[in-house]
Image 1 (spheres, rainbow, N blue to C red):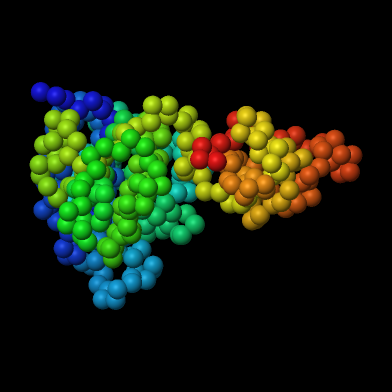
Image 2 (cartoon, rainbow, N blue to C red):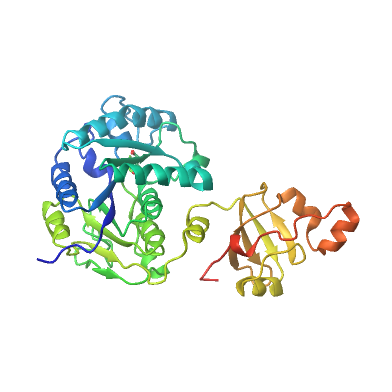
Length: 370
Ligand code: GLU
């Protein structure tokens, strides 16, 4: 019998499977998923569960009739639904489950990122099933990842998983919208995630879930660039999990890139959100793509309001293309004074010798499509 080739996987389960009928949590689809998790663990494979459904589960306790649910109500639903969701999973297992709630704030700060990673790895070492969700009850817009597809991809890179399974209520990625075109065909394997692939995604139609096909492709982009095979599968069908146990692909497989990014570069590219932009001259843009660090000289313009240590995008002033992303050693305010100057002139004018590099080469990530 063919066996799955992965050793550690992240399994993301969407709200449509946890609370399918808007009447709180349900075991309807979870039984097959729980059996899959148990079977994998018995074979010695490790699973981290990323479970949505807190807000959807909370609707049972906090009713709201309108179409667009206010943020405060959604947060309250998430707070009350999170414990229902955890309890619902726990009753399927005779091993312990650990609730791990995080926000984007925990992932973009390097020290907190490493701390979350250590906690998750320790839980796995002790045979506990981590059940991760975004901390929706507390997260503000600036602090959140926003959808559990991207969160699951971040968790997969955190724990160095070799596979990411995104369980949804659709069979995979189709070459057209199957709700509109009944002859749309499922794409079995995606070797490279291009703009054409993104164009196949529509938005979400679910009132509670935030994801949709687009966030799933974004998640696949994050995970595959870290060397993680990513699958979108239909978690409503029991047969899906039988296929997965045999190592078959029941949905759409996004193949991992052969040359994955280093952990730090991946974090910089996919986890940190840019707080501003530096516009540089063409020669500087070219030098950066050839591995140089960014100094004050080549900077023409500064956009946005950022602090030391924030991530910024670097744009080529010649053709307006984004060339790189990096961690800036100076604030936007400081750079307004320093831009375009030689460091030696700065020392003379200001009477101190500042850090020579605005962004160190090691903190710079070239954007491939630039
Ligand atoms: N974290 C949200 C919840 O548990 C789900 C986000 C999503 O649907 O992607 O309700």
